[in-house]
Image 1 (cartoon, one colour):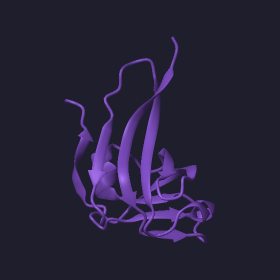
Image 2 (cartoon, rainbow, N blue to C red):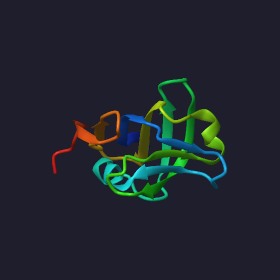
Image 3 (cartoon, rainbow, N blue to C red):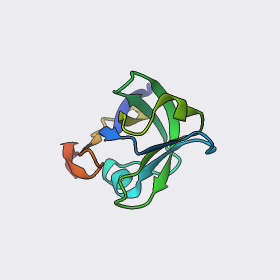
Image 4 (cartoon, rainbow, N blue to C red):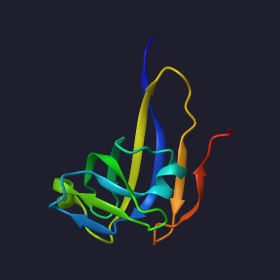
Length: 120
């Protein structure tokens, strides 16, 4: 069996609401957005900063539901600031096909629709 890495979840062009350098680490994401994208607390994610080109990896912490929070915490706060546009993605190692959950948000990080939603 050969495992390959496939995209599982994506939040496309979210707006960073805060960057907290003094926090222990992670990215805090609105719980509603997490659920819609299929992300879970502690999950490893890639963050691609569309505004400045920086890329980094961290893990997810749930934020207040429907708050729109996208807060970059810890050392990663050097790579993003409030107002930056980011793409947040997670991947899965598998030997089976994956239908990713990719969501779109507006400038206030409110869910606007699915870029791709698997048939369930």
